[in-house]
Image (cartoon, rainbow, N blue to C red; front, side, top):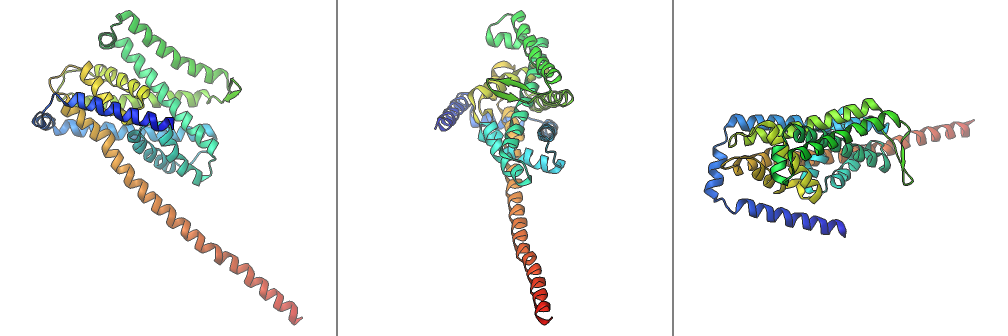
Length: 327
């Protein structure tokens, strides 16, 4: 019940933010803003988006090794892309992507507990990546978050240092507590240091690629530099995690329009939304349907083979019984 209430609240917030963001633009303004984006910018944004989703498949590939149930990369990539391309737009990404992951991984020998560990590991990868990129943005470009929050530059840098310290603490725990940590009776198994380092690096690279995708679209209407865009994106992403708005719809756009200079960012932001969320959603939905059809056909084929396998032993048994009767 609570999840439905939160989902409705998230959708209501998204609707409010979209209305607030679009109300000052006419259809002609939006159309002109979209047409003003060079094709080269759109192509570059699409390239960064593809690289990001490729990077996301590495989340699952590492997570399966953490669980001790490694699978071939194509299987990990299939489960990752479908679960995240759909989960990003459905909302409550951890829960929705977890449901899709379970649908795939349970077929390939993982238990519900194993899938839960995969989801937690991927969530930690998101967290460490967000911490590192956020720390870089706050330490190197404190003026944007300072103007947004009203905090002094020194305080913003202190928060950035805290984010970096948390990421380093995670690596320290992975190095020192290989047998895990017990928190209120729950045992948390830390990944090996090598895996934690790869996890942190992959999470950071992914968020850097998403920010680059946004930057490629936004640069058509703004002179903001990459770190400015990264700061705005991290801010919007944190707000998305707090509100659980599906895909950060309206939240990311509001953060970017508020934090970045630009006369008309609405077109580039719509382009970013289409390239990074809607196109993967369409492709992921198609891949999901194709995979389900393939799974059902393979299941039906295996069911048809089972009676044949039973008949052969029965036939041999009948022959043996006949031979005994003759004797």
